[in-house]
Image 1 (cartoon, rainbow, N blue to C red):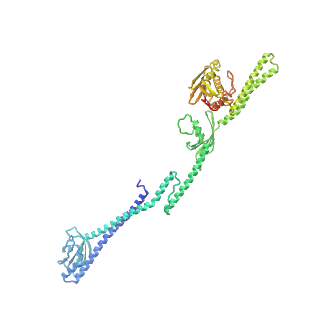
Image 2 (cartoon, rainbow, N blue to C red):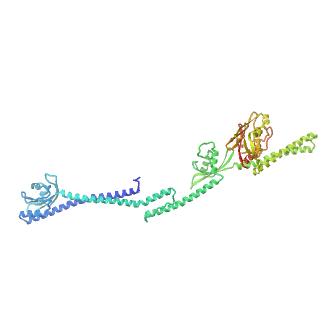
Image 3 (tube, helix red, strand yellow):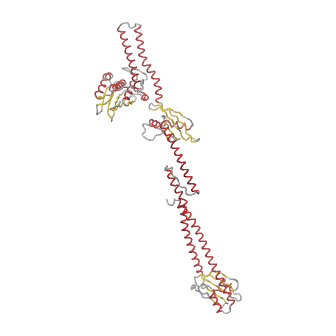
Length: 585
């Protein structure tokens, strides 16, 4: 983490650059000063040799000559005057390491012997004979005789001078590096401090703190960057707020829609749904335990068709007696189809209402036509004196009376049902002892059940025997359900009344082992005039008007309860209604 810091990177870069420059400069300076000191030493030695040559040419007295030379020469060097092959003079030196040179060495060395022969001057670095001491020697020939003046000095003096210079240069370089380090750190901190603040501000923006601002400390590029960052924060806050408003508005629209909406991508994955769409998917997958909602197989082909053809596709679905219309339209990302949106409408009630409107007229016409026809026919028989005897006329009048009663019951039931659906039902709620009340209802049907060879049973499970409801209305519900169960159960079958108590509810179950109800008919059994027997064939014992279950449903709802039906073809039917133990009307 430390090495990822911009401060460290910038500081290290500046330090590395200055170190490289100082190192290069130090090497060049050391090389320069080493050559400079050697050249200075050569110049000094050559100047000394010129002075000695001049003195040799001016003074003839050797004692005076040597004394004068020792006064003008550098004490750390030695002067050698070669007069001829047998005569030479060498000076003293304060440098104890600088040994004297024998005369033969000058004549044995090619370069030095050339000076003695007046072939020119010499500047040379060499090694003293029989020692490891390096020296710098210069020589000039004498003008009037075959001789020369040589001056030599140990190179250790030059190296010592160079070493002192090197120490000074390295010290200066070290000080420069230290100062550069502080300067680089200060500069990098100065440059990166606003960037660090921007980084913290960016992290705050990422957390949703859009009011965060970066202080503007300079008016350079970093200051302009801070201004742009603050402007970006304000714009981002504005756009996020606008997006949230649009999202909330879209969510509110989706939640308030009665139709289901599903947004899909090209792979059929569900992206967005609203509650009606979720109920639709759960309804189609009621047996699936996976909590993740997936697109039903019935709609995958529709999605593929909408994406391929790039046009709106409509499909109708029927599932467990409910009808749905699905309209799927492609969604575009510019010119590319990125998915589709499906609008799902539950058309069950509309289709059911259309069907009920048609069936209502047919049912009323059918229910009224038979008694009216019988009334008309038998009354005509009486008017035309077809019935000759009094007994025959009484029989015809009795039939006319029964049919009029039947028409009256039908009309009264229609009126009762209309009042119930309008909310005008009146309940007389009282405390009822359940067991004797229920046994009395069951006993009414023992005779009918025995005639048809059907076993009628009851099974009660409740701790408190007292419940509050309208006994006449609930008896009407149970009478209708038990009568229907007996009429739709074949000989040898069983009809059972099960009453049980759960929490604050009393549950009434009327079970039979009869022919059952078709799955497509289950949603409509509580509608007026609806009969699962499409042929309208009357069973033994007569057929009802088709209003009993509708009336039972309204009575149960008036008691703040619910009623439902479960059935399988050829296995039997169970009607269940739930009543609260105590109701407030």
